[in-house]
Length: 95
Image (cartoon, rainbow, N blue to C red):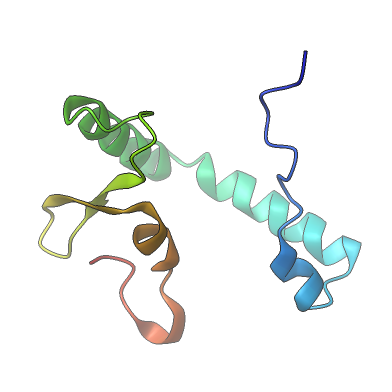
């Protein structure tokens, strides 16, 4: 039986485009692991997953995510749009 784990985890194509060394990739993955395990990150994920389930969009393949806005509201939007908003160039990470 094939594993359900993400076989591409830690192998993002952008790492190759940036010519990252194996050591740099390991450092980034270690940082990401630490950041994702903070209480703040866990609370945020729990809140969004709970809302996704409540709205019936969790795991149904519709491509929608619940996203935080600057005012603190939760809104549905395309997952690709939500996940692409990552704070580059001093822009907010929230819609």
